[in-house]
Amino acid sequence: MEVINVWLRNIGWLTAVTALLVLVKRRYARLALQQESGYENNEVYKAASMFAGGGPVEEVSRMLTASFEFSAEGIEMILARALPCRGDADGGYAAFVGAVNKVLGEEVYRS
Image (cartoon, rainbow, N blue to C red):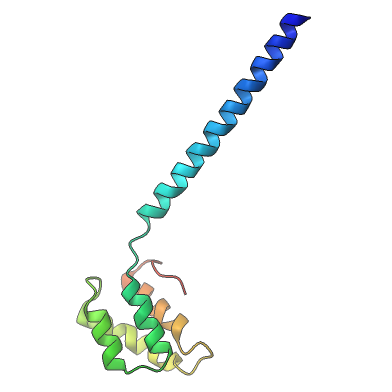
């Protein structure tokens, strides 16, 4: 009977250690994924806020020009897609971020 109790105790410890290792592995995998996908440029969010706040289009364009992600044509396309939505409740913020994602061809920025 004592052998069974020792055996069950050892299985319990093994289960607890395995569960802990799985949790640690998941945490490290999540951190790695967050770092991998974290190449967002904060200047884009600042430009979107300025755009939504009614800032001058020239200043917004200048902020985007400083970014390595956009060409002059891309900036024109972003502004052309976002300007009609400037009267929305959010000032066109979501449309601006959506236009940036369309120009980039992938969902990089979130509104």
